[in-house]
Image (cartoon, rainbow, N blue to C red; front, side, top):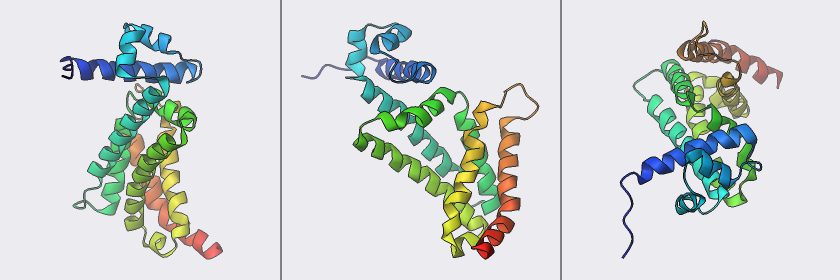
Amino acid sequence: MARPRAADHEDKRQAILDRAAELFAAHGYDRTSTAMIAEACRVSKALLYHYYKDKSELLFDVLAQHLQHLLEVVRGATDERFTPRERLENVAIALLEAYRDADAVHRVQLACLGLLPPERQENLRTLERAIVGEVALVLQDLSPELQEDRRLLKPATMSLFAMLNWHYLWHREDGAVTRADYARLAAALVAEGLPGAVRELAQAG
């Protein structure tokens, strides 16, 4: 008969994921040992292995949980009841809010995803592509030119992500610009500047 899970199983598992993300971000994946993770979680290595058989599995879950959450957030912000312009702003605000307190995981995503086995990398890349795809649909609705010349769809989409994804490097929560303010700015830069930019590049190409 299978041993029942403890009532706090998920809480402990989440605490392990959170501490592991912080350590991977601070020290790098290779320099973070399971002993360091267990110590940070104030559990024994034996208990840590009860939740995760190895460090690779732990890294995968850190990233998979983060990306799945981002995908749900983006899908929730792209309600068809809103105009494309409103959806773009909703997506930008929702993503920056989802990034709040997730700086460590974000750094781990950028630096460590490529260290996983190929099959697991592909699982995570699939989630990344789904997130990008949802945002690309919003931009496509916003700019009919992108529907006519799809060569520019990915560059335009990734330009928005570049503005949002690197926000953590300079933004201060006590600064003059809030997350929502910056999200609106990023959306406005894309929405107001995108049609003209796409037309110019399309004509040049």
